[in-house]
Image (cartoon, rainbow, N blue to C red):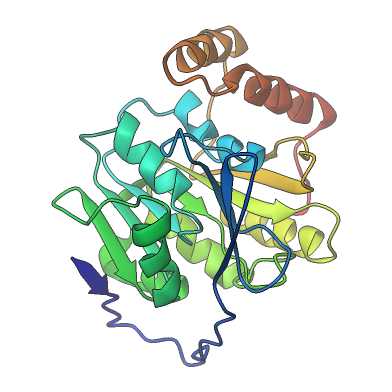
Length: 264
């Protein structure tokens, strides 16, 4: 069952949805989601529908290095439902919520990207991500928050203010982790990074991938990374899920060695 977002605390400025057409393409056994442009909004390998095809989306799972069994996983932006399906497969006891503003995206994920029907542990909310994170009922309830909010141009997040990211941080539990998809070579990158740094206790940017995406990890409270332990956890993740988790630890180690972002 699809739910509409409950929004007891409405923002003073509401965004009016302006949806581009949802379009598809296929190449070499991979189905791609677009919003009427050539920019890729999501992907699914037809023979492996629960696999995460795009490298940046794989990096959005870097929270696995820090959290074993999330009490609640939330995705802001559904895309082609790759993260939703992957989390459902590998964390079958963790409630998963996906928030998506465009009803056509939800429909096409069900019909063309094998998104399961909602049940007791899968909630699909048709609503605004900004309203969701500002709702106090969600504050302090989320262990994992995955933020991937792009429009048809696919170049900069549609929600990127310090207020939005602070609301995201308030939704996390004390041990909670957020992963955020940014676009490294776009002018919005530095603005978003500053806003993220103002909201989270520690922020680490993973290396840019070939698509130009940069995944940023935000921690509600500072972790104490033991890299030997992280590499051991990465090896387990790789053995079980086939995700390239060692590269995530390499990227985090490189970022810490270079110095964490200072725009706080």
